[in-house]
Amino acid sequence: MINGVPRELIEAARIDGAGEARIFFELVLPLVRPMMGAFLMISFMGTWNNFINPQIVMQSPELQPLSVALNNLKGLYGSDYSLIMAGTIVSIAPVMCLFLLLQREFIAGLTGGAVKG
Image (cartoon, rainbow, N blue to C red; front, side):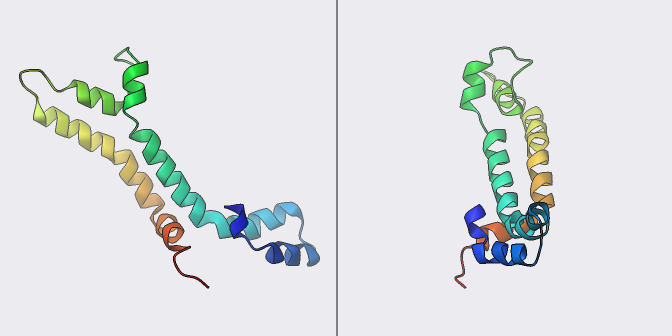
């Protein structure tokens, strides 16, 4: 990610007299912000949707994440689909809010390397 910032740009800022903190906050951080937004979104979704590890490791029902708890709502002879759908909406809400907050950075980070130039 840091290799995406041209070295010449950082050297030009140093020649102009900018300190390391100013280079980072005013030059590097705005350039890598789309990449950080896309990385944050993908990492959060990977962690949020993790199912196998919590199901194996956490045996206590109080410690299980929402995805495992939703799976446990399925019964052997029947399921309460309204409760499962309500739980699904609740589990989608944090991911949707994060995507709406980071939408611009996420799209810019995904399409940033698509066009050469």
